[in-house]
Length: 497
Image (cartoon, rainbow, N blue to C red; front, top):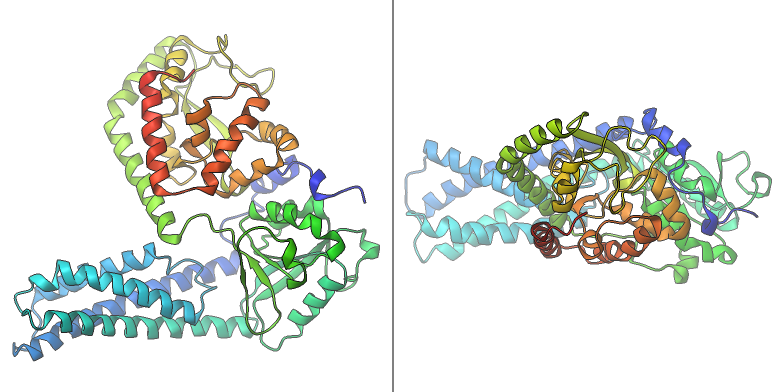
């Protein structure tokens, strides 16, 4: 066979990018997307209504054992609204509204217990201890009773919603688009086992990708053949695949690593048959105890609360920067307009999270038609750069408009710098692991840019890559803050170009 994962075509071929541009790929995945949104709404509405009722009931209960009149003042309804909103925020940060169609009842009980306990401790010290109705002897009882009411009520409500979803999955009313990688006995066995189960696990098979020609596979007449491994990325994107089951024979186990690399760029759920478990590198977990045994590759970079906190930080920081720096934006806009003809803001297509294209915004630092002969990286003493452009680049002020990219969700404050598809195709030929960077949102600043600076050619891009890979392996809020502080130092020292 001529094609192998080590010789895969660059991930962002013109045909793949055309799938995005033509609208083949959408973030809203039809009816499944609507079901997710509705299920998330039901979880939030249920948590809100239950938490609101629990607080009012708790207030009446405390009044009863304190010998107070059993009535609710208007202030208590306002308190209930504030406290309930706090619960929703806590549960959202904890990730209780993520993957609404893929939750389990045990997961609900464990997560609700853990984060309700944290919330009650905060509430106990911030509100209940200062309540005039409360006495020192009843504070501990109050906290215990409130925890029990909140935990049991929320758990029961969420178990009902989760059970309803699981029943629909088992009855095949909900199914996740699934692709099999492999076409031998292992692939056929796992396919038949999953299809013949009386209770579905949610796999809706759309086809398979093989290592061999179509005539050599065991799925003829059963599943659609989407091609060989070099088509894997495009198939996942264009067919909106959510589950990939890797079922290669042991003789092909050396190709599993790079198959996983490709799948990770698409943020699909990756499952693998246990027979080749020993060949997997990375974090794994068992998918199901009952039914067909599969091992789930689980490359979670950040915890749910860290993801939420990072996004909240990005939005807050960007809003603050846009407001605080608005006079500087105005001055730079006038200066750019007077310096040379052309637009003030320059838009350029870059590749972001999940290999999706977006338009990055920058203050224009080059003359118009600077790339009339094709894409080219800037170099020292580049004649295409305007007078003010040299100042902007030296102080990295040309990147300031990207706070808007962060605000709308295309970028993060800290993350690997996004590149153009033209250069990515060149980079992956030398360093295929560059594709790992598409697991996360690109950033205004990065560890690679702080440590290495701007790159003038593909070789320098590859050398800078190691710092961005290190960032992915060590992502944390504290690391982001350190990179931001170092970026400010670099700007003040004028170490841009």
